[in-house]
Image (cartoon, rainbow, N blue to C red; front, side):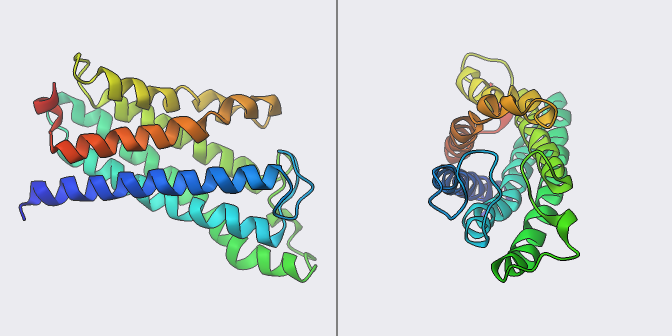
Length: 220
């Protein structure tokens, strides 16, 4: 297998895994808002230990899949568009690092304490929507993730052949303000919620592109 072939396979796998994990999170979030995972339901409720597991395990794994997808994209980008793909990879890496730290702490440290009802001394680590430090970090991370998808769109030449994939990636990129300003304007969650649709579609669009085995210039 050639290096180029390996890169395409990496991109295909990472994009497909990213789409799958994002859909797993989507389903868990719907269950959480309906109150089926033990919380009071709705977007402002604090999760139970059970809810943390169902919501954050796929989210924790999504970060590395997203980075691998963008790394493969950058590897296959040529010419003066490589700066856009590298920016996408850098932003995606920061997103994965920030949210990965949040989710790992929640899953391995907070959830066990929450399960036994002992949160004394770790109140600052609770993941409370719009009222906690870690929730703000999470929103910042996802705003960078959305921005990374916008730069990924710019990595493709604006040709007729690339119009569809650029458009799909831009739909996630356009949600960046809805994530970045959500702490100040919580109603933006209803705009940011479109991520549940746009991100999986973007990942699947990249999966199709990697599957065709085309470089950026070759697809132009």
